[in-house]
Image (cartoon, rainbow, N blue to C red; front, side, top):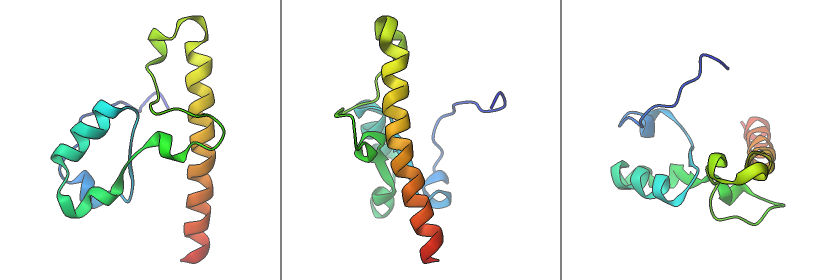
Length: 94
């Protein structure tokens, strides 16, 4: 994981990737603003995958106090479970 780095979204990402997930409303709005209309169905808020935790955004853990990282980890694990289920379903239907 040490090789992974965040980067700005590129125009070709909308063609290459099946799903582009955003963490907060600003990321979602900015991503949709540069995404071609025909491909906007690929862009979703990560929170749309939440099952157990109600949240509209994945907050920046640095501003969440002592429990901020634990809270964000709970949200990411919850949404990631759904993402894995969707990936498994896709593999089984292809």
